[in-house]
Length: 391
Image 1 (tube, rainbow, N blue to C red):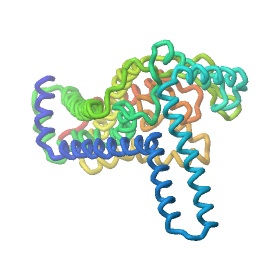
Image 2: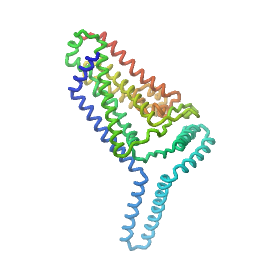
Image 3: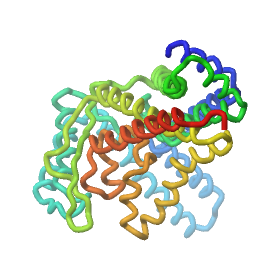
Image 4: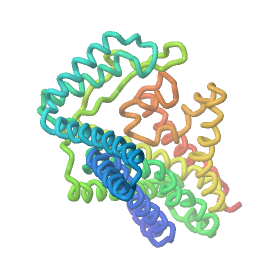
């Protein structure tokens, strides 16, 4: 088996498609990281302060050119209002920097009042939503950690936004690498030579699956590690002891999906990243299994590529708008692999909210992914074993 995998790796790296996959990853990294940094900078208080200062300066220049006293008074009023906003932003920035512990204590008291008053009739006004914020803030205080904000520019904030792009592109990268890994043998008539060797047919399929998995996992993981390290060197590494709230379970209240009180808990950011990495490995394996299965069915490379794309992307984007009109279609989305591409949403169980299905849990999501891994590869093994290679 090892010799077969090694041979498949050599064959794969001599094909142009591997370079296409690498280019997709590089483009995703450049666009994702650049876009993430630009977005974070645009919402930072410092950027808002600079924007207000620039507007005030422009108004003052405009005022110096006007002789009409009424217009001058209107501009003075605009400048005054902007200066008030500027003072508030500066005050808030200083307060966040110097008094974050007192601010957190005050926020916890306010959240507890809201939690006790919540009716648990909607997602936003639920006791568990307030409790999640409370336990996170209490963790910051007990561990003497200044809270992270979405406007903070560090390697983790960039990484989270970058992952959104790489996760969307992940099946495409896998399909470029593996969708014709079997069909290519048929189209080039090399399958007869391969099948004539004293090698079990199951080993042929498994070696191709393992090869696709190694290359896909390697390329995606390397890109993520590089982005994490490079952005960490430039913008600073996030403390991996920061808290992350996960595991929320939901219940149905009328048509709403409401979090169950007491179901959420905290893990460290470091543990969260490890779990996300392990889940990502499972998700990529499922994509590879599905792609190899389709490749065993097709003798045409183009058909294998098209079918792989349709199965993961096409069906989801067809069903998704229909589910907005026909709520029952959300249960079809529940069994589509595309719904489970983001490992961070599986860990936090945000998938349950996105699909508005209360019984989905992290373990349910893992089960769905496991089905996409085991059934396609088992079917591919059976299909290839009974396939008439000479036909």
